[in-house]
Image (cartoon, rainbow, N blue to C red; front, side, top):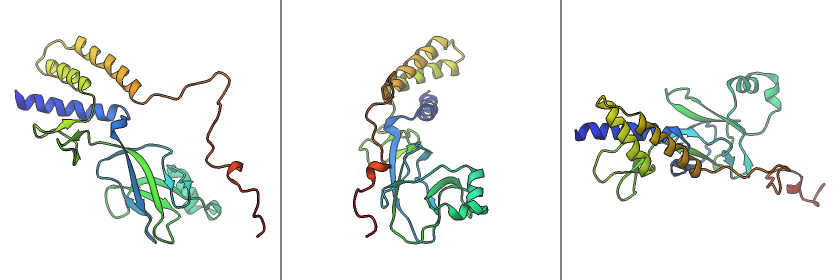
Length: 215
């Protein structure tokens, strides 16, 4: 019985972790570029990228992407690629290894530029002391990073289903709570009927100095 409950608990945790971009699973990865190296390892707990979070901190500029396969080949193989100088990226299978890699273009000509991106981790379990994270509960001292109520409700309906008992009421209760908690976890900015108010523009004419031209 205990082994079955643990299996159901881990199955629910894995599914719940991938259901929503939970803030507790949002992590930051910073890594330096290496001269003549285009491919970089993704974090071991990488699930998927948070779009529009890739930046070159050394140049204080965003890195464009993810570039579609069609656009990537247009840049790499077509004449238009010779005139595109902004840094861009895609996540694709590595050239020499059957794993996903973070690939940047143009290939760095120097080392030491700091790139950063946010990603959603697949590691939803933490050790008791918080020193490390993993993708499943294995010991009594492990605890889930996800909401305890959702984990309890999920285990309940999965256990009933595994025993061949009615579970629709429990499943609906879980899904209602999931909608409520996920909505609160990452609230959207407020909308205005008159359009956006004060907007922070990172790149534009406000960033251009008024003096110093032609020196």
